[in-house]
Image (tube, rainbow, N blue to C red):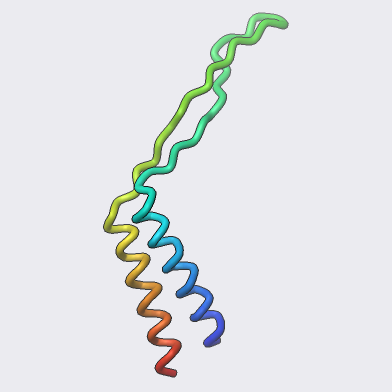
Length: 73
């Protein structure tokens, strides 16, 4: 059980640092605009997900808390 808590703490710390370093995630989707017989028109759309600094901070503090909890046991 303690190994699970340590692993979860490490994952949360890494996610928190990553969320604080990159505050947005950008990805590309392919959308079909028009399809007439064998002719197909598509478009690439770039979408962005904004990550709140509070999310990164909460993840980082939660991970550090779990690591401290595991060390005290």
